[in-house]
Length: 413
Image (cartoon, rainbow, N blue to C red):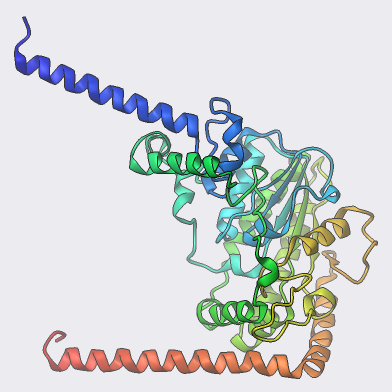
Protein backbone atom coordinates (compact mmCIF):
# COMPACT_ATOMS: atom_id res chain seq x y z
CA UNK A 1 0.00 0.00 0.00
CA UNK A 2 1.41 3.43 -0.90
CA UNK A 3 2.56 5.53 2.00
CA UNK A 4 0.64 8.70 2.99
CA UNK A 5 3.48 10.76 1.56
CA UNK A 6 3.25 8.97 -1.80
CA UNK A 7 -0.53 9.39 -1.86
CA UNK A 8 -0.15 13.09 -1.06
CA UNK A 9 2.37 13.58 -3.88
CA UNK A 10 0.15 11.74 -6.33
CA UNK A 11 -2.87 13.83 -5.34
CA UNK A 12 -0.84 17.03 -5.66
CA UNK A 13 0.40 16.01 -9.07
CA UNK A 14 -3.12 15.18 -10.20
CA UNK A 15 -4.42 18.52 -8.90
CA UNK A 16 -1.59 20.37 -10.63
CA UNK A 17 -2.27 18.55 -13.91
CA UNK A 18 -5.98 19.37 -13.61
CA UNK A 19 -5.19 23.05 -13.02
CA UNK A 20 -2.89 23.12 -16.03
CA UNK A 21 -5.48 21.39 -18.19
CA UNK A 22 -8.19 23.74 -17.00
CA UNK A 23 -6.05 26.80 -17.66
CA UNK A 24 -5.16 25.55 -21.12
CA UNK A 25 -8.80 24.77 -21.93
CA UNK A 26 -9.88 28.24 -20.77
CA UNK A 27 -7.14 29.93 -22.83
CA UNK A 28 -8.03 27.92 -25.94
CA UNK A 29 -11.73 28.70 -25.52
CA UNK A 30 -11.29 32.44 -24.98
CA UNK A 31 -8.27 32.57 -27.34
CA UNK A 32 -7.33 36.22 -26.65
CA UNK A 33 -4.93 36.45 -29.61
CA UNK A 34 -6.85 34.20 -32.02
CA UNK A 35 -3.98 31.71 -32.31
CA UNK A 36 -6.31 28.67 -31.90
CA UNK A 37 -8.80 29.77 -34.55
CA UNK A 38 -10.07 26.32 -35.45
CA UNK A 39 -10.66 25.40 -31.78
CA UNK A 40 -12.16 28.57 -30.33
CA UNK A 41 -15.73 29.91 -30.73
CA UNK A 42 -16.17 32.59 -33.40
CA UNK A 43 -18.79 34.30 -31.23
CA UNK A 44 -15.95 35.91 -29.27
CA UNK A 45 -14.05 37.05 -32.36
CA UNK A 46 -15.02 40.74 -32.14
CA UNK A 47 -13.76 40.93 -28.55
CA UNK A 48 -10.30 39.41 -29.04
CA UNK A 49 -7.01 41.30 -29.24
CA UNK A 50 -6.54 41.45 -33.00
CA UNK A 51 -3.95 44.20 -32.60
CA UNK A 52 -1.22 42.04 -31.07
CA UNK A 53 1.64 40.63 -33.11
CA UNK A 54 0.61 37.16 -31.97
CA UNK A 55 -2.85 37.60 -33.48
CA UNK A 56 -1.67 39.20 -36.70
CA UNK A 57 1.09 36.64 -37.24
CA UNK A 58 -1.31 33.75 -36.61
CA UNK A 59 -3.71 35.14 -39.19
CA UNK A 60 -0.94 35.60 -41.76
CA UNK A 61 0.38 32.08 -41.07
CA UNK A 62 -3.08 30.55 -41.64
CA UNK A 63 -3.13 31.93 -45.19
CA UNK A 64 -6.24 32.41 -47.25
CA UNK A 65 -5.37 36.09 -47.73
CA UNK A 66 -5.71 37.56 -51.20
CA UNK A 67 -4.48 41.09 -50.49
CA UNK A 68 -2.08 41.69 -47.60
CA UNK A 69 -1.47 45.20 -46.24
CA UNK A 70 1.84 45.59 -44.42
CA UNK A 71 3.55 48.39 -42.52
CA UNK A 72 3.42 50.29 -39.24
CA UNK A 73 0.57 51.96 -37.37
CA UNK A 74 0.05 54.25 -40.37
CA UNK A 75 -1.19 51.18 -42.25
CA UNK A 76 -2.99 49.71 -39.25
CA UNK A 77 -5.07 52.85 -38.71
CA UNK A 78 -5.21 54.24 -42.26
CA UNK A 79 -5.73 51.31 -44.67
CA UNK A 80 -9.25 49.93 -44.26
CA UNK A 81 -9.50 46.42 -45.78
CA UNK A 82 -13.16 47.14 -46.60
CA UNK A 83 -12.13 49.66 -49.27
CA UNK A 84 -13.02 47.87 -52.55
CA UNK A 85 -10.07 49.32 -54.46
CA UNK A 86 -7.59 47.04 -52.67
CA UNK A 87 -8.86 44.17 -54.78
CA UNK A 88 -11.17 41.20 -54.70
CA UNK A 89 -11.11 38.45 -52.11
CA UNK A 90 -9.93 38.51 -48.51
CA UNK A 91 -8.04 41.68 -47.60
CA UNK A 92 -6.10 41.66 -44.32
CA UNK A 93 -4.38 44.53 -42.51
CA UNK A 94 -1.14 43.28 -40.92
CA UNK A 95 0.06 46.78 -39.99
CA UNK A 96 1.92 46.73 -36.67
CA UNK A 97 1.44 49.55 -34.17
CA UNK A 98 4.79 50.92 -33.03
CA UNK A 99 6.49 48.76 -35.66
CA UNK A 100 9.44 49.30 -37.94
CA UNK A 101 10.87 47.86 -41.13
CA UNK A 102 12.56 45.00 -39.26
CA UNK A 103 9.13 43.73 -38.23
CA UNK A 104 7.46 44.51 -41.55
CA UNK A 105 10.11 42.54 -43.40
CA UNK A 106 9.58 39.52 -41.15
CA UNK A 107 5.82 39.80 -41.59
CA UNK A 108 6.29 39.71 -45.37
CA UNK A 109 8.71 36.79 -45.03
CA UNK A 110 6.13 34.83 -43.03
CA UNK A 111 3.44 35.49 -45.62
CA UNK A 112 5.68 34.37 -48.48
CA UNK A 113 6.74 31.18 -46.69
CA UNK A 114 3.31 30.22 -45.33
CA UNK A 115 0.74 31.01 -48.02
CA UNK A 116 1.66 33.83 -50.41
CA UNK A 117 -1.13 36.34 -51.09
CA UNK A 118 -2.04 37.38 -54.60
CA UNK A 119 -1.09 40.98 -53.84
CA UNK A 120 1.05 42.58 -51.11
CA UNK A 121 1.07 46.31 -50.38
CA UNK A 122 4.15 47.20 -48.31
CA UNK A 123 4.26 50.65 -46.73
CA UNK A 124 7.88 51.66 -46.06
CA UNK A 125 8.43 54.93 -44.20
CA UNK A 126 11.61 56.60 -42.99
CA UNK A 127 10.81 56.02 -39.31
CA UNK A 128 11.03 52.27 -39.79
CA UNK A 129 14.60 52.51 -41.04
CA UNK A 130 16.14 53.72 -37.78
CA UNK A 131 19.02 51.39 -36.85
CA UNK A 132 19.05 49.65 -33.49
CA UNK A 133 15.32 49.02 -33.21
CA UNK A 134 14.01 45.52 -33.75
CA UNK A 135 10.80 43.88 -32.57
CA UNK A 136 8.42 45.14 -29.91
CA UNK A 137 8.04 43.08 -26.74
CA UNK A 138 5.28 40.85 -28.12
CA UNK A 139 7.16 40.24 -31.38
CA UNK A 140 9.01 37.31 -29.73
CA UNK A 141 5.66 35.72 -28.87
CA UNK A 142 4.46 35.74 -32.47
CA UNK A 143 5.00 33.73 -35.63
CA UNK A 144 6.75 36.76 -37.09
CA UNK A 145 9.89 36.10 -35.03
CA UNK A 146 11.94 33.36 -36.70
CA UNK A 147 13.95 33.01 -33.47
CA UNK A 148 10.96 32.25 -31.24
CA UNK A 149 11.23 29.38 -28.77
CA UNK A 150 8.42 26.89 -29.37
CA UNK A 151 7.92 26.03 -25.68
CA UNK A 152 7.93 29.67 -24.62
CA UNK A 153 5.59 30.58 -27.49
CA UNK A 154 2.90 28.04 -26.71
CA UNK A 155 3.42 28.24 -22.95
CA UNK A 156 2.75 31.96 -23.07
CA UNK A 157 -0.58 31.39 -24.83
CA UNK A 158 -1.73 28.39 -22.80
CA UNK A 159 -0.59 28.85 -19.21
CA UNK A 160 0.16 31.42 -16.56
CA UNK A 161 -1.47 34.44 -14.97
CA UNK A 162 -1.06 36.67 -18.03
CA UNK A 163 -2.84 34.15 -20.25
CA UNK A 164 -5.72 33.89 -17.78
CA UNK A 165 -6.03 37.66 -17.42
CA UNK A 166 -6.13 38.14 -21.18
CA UNK A 167 -8.87 35.50 -21.46
CA UNK A 168 -10.89 37.16 -18.71
CA UNK A 169 -10.55 40.48 -20.50
CA UNK A 170 -12.09 38.93 -23.63
CA UNK A 171 -15.05 37.70 -21.60
CA UNK A 172 -15.52 41.08 -19.88
CA UNK A 173 -15.53 42.88 -23.24
CA UNK A 174 -18.07 40.39 -24.59
CA UNK A 175 -20.30 40.85 -21.56
CA UNK A 176 -20.26 44.63 -22.02
CA UNK A 177 -20.58 44.43 -25.80
CA UNK A 178 -17.31 46.36 -26.28
CA UNK A 179 -15.33 45.18 -29.33
CA UNK A 180 -11.54 45.05 -29.24
CA UNK A 181 -9.36 47.90 -30.51
CA UNK A 182 -8.94 46.19 -33.90
CA UNK A 183 -11.42 44.41 -36.11
CA UNK A 184 -10.80 40.74 -36.99
CA UNK A 185 -9.43 41.91 -40.35
CA UNK A 186 -6.61 43.68 -38.48
CA UNK A 187 -7.82 47.26 -38.99
CA UNK A 188 -7.72 49.58 -35.98
CA UNK A 189 -11.18 50.93 -35.26
CA UNK A 190 -11.33 54.74 -35.53
CA UNK A 191 -11.86 56.45 -32.15
CA UNK A 192 -15.49 57.32 -31.46
CA UNK A 193 -14.75 60.85 -30.20
CA UNK A 194 -12.59 61.82 -33.15
CA UNK A 195 -14.75 64.85 -33.92
CA UNK A 196 -13.78 66.37 -30.57
CA UNK A 197 -10.02 66.06 -31.14
CA UNK A 198 -7.85 69.11 -30.58
CA UNK A 199 -5.82 68.46 -33.73
CA UNK A 200 -3.35 71.29 -33.04
CA UNK A 201 -2.48 69.79 -29.67
CA UNK A 202 -2.03 66.36 -31.25
CA UNK A 203 0.16 67.81 -34.01
CA UNK A 204 2.30 69.61 -31.44
CA UNK A 205 2.81 66.42 -29.44
CA UNK A 206 3.83 64.44 -32.50
CA UNK A 207 6.19 67.08 -33.92
CA UNK A 208 7.86 67.62 -30.54
CA UNK A 209 8.11 63.87 -29.96
CA UNK A 210 9.71 63.23 -33.33
CA UNK A 211 12.19 66.10 -32.88
CA UNK A 212 13.22 64.57 -29.55
CA UNK A 213 13.34 60.90 -30.50
CA UNK A 214 13.84 60.63 -34.25
CA UNK A 215 14.33 63.76 -36.32
CA UNK A 216 17.76 64.66 -35.00
CA UNK A 217 21.46 63.90 -35.44
CA UNK A 218 21.14 60.56 -33.63
CA UNK A 219 19.17 59.02 -36.52
CA UNK A 220 21.20 56.26 -38.20
CA UNK A 221 19.71 54.85 -41.42
CA UNK A 222 19.84 51.03 -41.65
CA UNK A 223 20.57 50.00 -45.24
CA UNK A 224 20.37 46.31 -44.32
CA UNK A 225 16.62 46.65 -43.90
CA UNK A 226 16.35 47.83 -47.50
CA UNK A 227 18.61 44.96 -48.60
CA UNK A 228 16.37 42.48 -46.76
CA UNK A 229 13.30 44.02 -48.38
CA UNK A 230 14.96 43.72 -51.79
CA UNK A 231 15.51 39.99 -51.26
CA UNK A 232 11.88 39.55 -50.18
CA UNK A 233 10.60 41.44 -53.22
CA UNK A 234 12.59 39.09 -55.41
CA UNK A 235 11.06 36.14 -53.58
CA UNK A 236 7.59 37.64 -54.02
CA UNK A 237 8.10 37.90 -57.77
CA UNK A 238 9.40 34.33 -57.85
CA UNK A 239 6.14 33.21 -56.22
CA UNK A 240 3.93 35.23 -58.53
CA UNK A 241 2.94 37.85 -55.94
CA UNK A 242 2.10 41.36 -57.12
CA UNK A 243 4.15 43.53 -54.75
CA UNK A 244 3.57 47.27 -54.39
CA UNK A 245 5.93 49.36 -52.24
CA UNK A 246 4.37 52.56 -50.90
CA UNK A 247 6.00 55.49 -49.13
CA UNK A 248 3.00 56.67 -47.08
CA UNK A 249 2.10 60.34 -46.68
CA UNK A 250 2.83 62.52 -43.68
CA UNK A 251 1.62 66.06 -43.17
CA UNK A 252 3.75 68.91 -44.55
CA UNK A 253 4.43 70.10 -40.99
CA UNK A 254 6.11 66.80 -40.25
CA UNK A 255 8.16 67.18 -43.42
CA UNK A 256 9.26 70.56 -42.05
CA UNK A 257 10.23 68.82 -38.81
CA UNK A 258 12.45 66.56 -40.92
CA UNK A 259 14.10 69.65 -42.38
CA UNK A 260 14.64 71.53 -39.12
CA UNK A 261 15.76 68.33 -37.38
CA UNK A 262 18.35 67.71 -40.10
CA UNK A 263 17.11 64.35 -41.42
CA UNK A 264 15.68 65.44 -44.78
CA UNK A 265 18.84 64.18 -46.57
CA UNK A 266 18.09 60.76 -45.05
CA UNK A 267 14.59 60.88 -46.52
CA UNK A 268 16.05 61.54 -49.97
CA UNK A 269 18.50 58.70 -49.41
CA UNK A 270 15.55 56.53 -48.37
CA UNK A 271 13.75 57.06 -51.68
CA UNK A 272 16.90 56.43 -53.70
CA UNK A 273 17.57 53.21 -51.76
CA UNK A 274 14.02 52.00 -52.33
CA UNK A 275 14.24 52.76 -56.03
CA UNK A 276 17.49 50.79 -56.29
CA UNK A 277 15.97 47.85 -54.38
CA UNK A 278 12.85 47.75 -56.55
CA UNK A 279 14.85 48.01 -59.77
CA UNK A 280 17.12 45.15 -58.61
CA UNK A 281 14.11 42.95 -57.82
CA UNK A 282 12.58 43.77 -61.21
CA UNK A 283 15.73 42.70 -63.08
CA UNK A 284 15.24 39.13 -61.86
CA UNK A 285 13.83 36.56 -64.26
CA UNK A 286 10.64 35.73 -62.35
CA UNK A 287 6.99 34.96 -63.21
CA UNK A 288 5.54 37.62 -60.92
CA UNK A 289 4.71 41.12 -62.19
CA UNK A 290 7.29 43.89 -61.72
CA UNK A 291 7.32 45.53 -58.30
CA UNK A 292 5.74 48.99 -58.28
CA UNK A 293 7.10 51.85 -56.17
CA UNK A 294 4.89 54.80 -55.22
CA UNK A 295 5.36 57.82 -52.97
CA UNK A 296 2.52 59.86 -51.49
CA UNK A 297 4.74 62.37 -49.69
CA UNK A 298 3.91 65.92 -50.77
CA UNK A 299 3.79 69.57 -49.73
CA UNK A 300 0.45 70.20 -51.43
CA UNK A 301 -3.12 68.94 -51.49
CA UNK A 302 -4.20 66.72 -48.61
CA UNK A 303 -0.67 66.70 -47.18
CA UNK A 304 -0.90 70.45 -46.64
CA UNK A 305 -4.38 70.48 -45.08
CA UNK A 306 -4.77 73.42 -42.71
CA UNK A 307 -4.51 72.50 -39.04
CA UNK A 308 -7.19 74.11 -36.83
CA UNK A 309 -6.02 76.47 -34.07
CA UNK A 310 -5.43 75.26 -30.52
CA UNK A 311 -8.64 74.62 -28.62
CA UNK A 312 -10.76 74.20 -31.73
CA UNK A 313 -13.07 71.21 -32.02
CA UNK A 314 -13.02 71.46 -35.82
CA UNK A 315 -12.44 68.08 -37.42
CA UNK A 316 -9.74 67.61 -40.05
CA UNK A 317 -10.70 65.79 -43.21
CA UNK A 318 -7.52 63.79 -43.79
CA UNK A 319 -5.47 63.67 -40.56
CA UNK A 320 -5.55 62.75 -36.89
CA UNK A 321 -2.11 64.31 -36.40
CA UNK A 322 0.93 64.84 -38.60
CA UNK A 323 2.01 61.21 -38.74
CA UNK A 324 -1.29 59.29 -38.98
CA UNK A 325 -3.78 59.88 -41.77
CA UNK A 326 -7.45 59.00 -41.63
CA UNK A 327 -8.95 56.02 -43.52
CA UNK A 328 -10.44 58.48 -46.03
CA UNK A 329 -6.92 59.29 -47.24
CA UNK A 330 -5.99 55.61 -47.15
CA UNK A 331 -8.93 54.95 -49.48
CA UNK A 332 -7.61 57.60 -51.88
CA UNK A 333 -4.24 55.82 -51.87
CA UNK A 334 -5.92 52.49 -52.69
CA UNK A 335 -7.89 54.03 -55.54
CA UNK A 336 -4.80 55.74 -56.92
CA UNK A 337 -2.87 52.46 -56.89
CA UNK A 338 -5.49 50.07 -58.23
CA UNK A 339 -8.60 51.82 -59.53
CA UNK A 340 -7.40 53.02 -62.89
CA UNK A 341 -4.19 54.66 -61.73
CA UNK A 342 -4.86 58.03 -63.30
CA UNK A 343 -8.05 58.88 -61.39
CA UNK A 344 -6.19 61.39 -59.18
CA UNK A 345 -3.10 62.43 -61.11
CA UNK A 346 -2.16 65.12 -58.57
CA UNK A 347 -1.97 62.63 -55.71
CA UNK A 348 0.90 60.14 -55.48
CA UNK A 349 3.83 59.61 -57.81
CA UNK A 350 5.03 56.38 -59.42
CA UNK A 351 8.80 56.09 -58.86
CA UNK A 352 11.45 53.74 -60.18
CA UNK A 353 13.09 53.71 -63.61
CA UNK A 354 15.00 56.88 -62.77
CA UNK A 355 11.97 58.97 -61.77
CA UNK A 356 13.05 59.56 -58.17
CA UNK A 357 15.44 62.46 -58.80
CA UNK A 358 12.79 64.41 -60.72
CA UNK A 359 10.29 63.71 -57.95
CA UNK A 360 12.69 64.97 -55.26
CA UNK A 361 13.40 68.11 -57.31
CA UNK A 362 9.66 68.76 -57.59
CA UNK A 363 9.26 68.23 -53.83
CA UNK A 364 11.93 70.86 -53.16
CA UNK A 365 10.09 73.31 -55.41
CA UNK A 366 6.76 72.65 -53.69
CA UNK A 367 8.43 73.06 -50.32
CA UNK A 368 9.61 76.52 -51.33
CA UNK A 369 6.02 77.44 -52.15
CA UNK A 370 4.74 75.97 -48.86
CA UNK A 371 7.37 77.78 -46.78
CA UNK A 372 6.33 81.06 -48.40
CA UNK A 373 2.57 80.54 -48.22
CA UNK A 374 2.46 78.88 -44.78
CA UNK A 375 5.16 80.99 -43.14
CA UNK A 376 3.37 81.09 -39.78
CA UNK A 377 3.11 77.30 -39.65
CA UNK A 378 6.77 76.85 -40.58
CA UNK A 379 7.72 79.37 -37.88
CA UNK A 380 5.63 77.31 -35.42
CA UNK A 381 7.71 74.20 -36.20
CA UNK A 382 10.90 76.21 -35.67
CA UNK A 383 9.60 77.42 -32.29
CA UNK A 384 8.94 73.82 -31.28
CA UNK A 385 12.51 72.94 -32.24
CA UNK A 386 13.83 75.80 -30.07
CA UNK A 387 11.66 74.63 -27.17
CA UNK A 388 12.93 71.07 -27.54
CA UNK A 389 16.54 72.28 -27.75
CA UNK A 390 16.07 74.41 -24.62
CA UNK A 391 14.55 71.49 -22.72
CA UNK A 392 17.37 69.24 -23.81
CA UNK A 393 19.98 71.81 -22.75
CA UNK A 394 18.29 72.23 -19.38
CA UNK A 395 18.23 68.46 -18.85
CA UNK A 396 21.92 68.27 -19.75
CA UNK A 397 22.73 71.04 -17.25
CA UNK A 398 20.83 69.20 -14.52
CA UNK A 399 22.65 65.97 -15.37
CA UNK A 400 26.02 67.74 -15.23
CA UNK A 401 25.14 69.30 -11.88
CA UNK A 402 24.17 65.90 -10.48
CA UNK A 403 27.39 64.41 -11.81
CA UNK A 404 29.46 67.16 -10.17
CA UNK A 405 27.62 66.70 -6.88
CA UNK A 406 28.10 62.92 -6.97
CA UNK A 407 31.80 63.36 -7.67
CA UNK A 408 32.16 65.94 -4.89
CA UNK A 409 30.37 63.71 -2.37
CA UNK A 410 32.50 60.73 -3.23
CA UNK A 411 29.89 58.60 -5.00
CA UNK A 412 31.92 58.68 -8.20
CA UNK A 413 35.73 58.51 -8.15
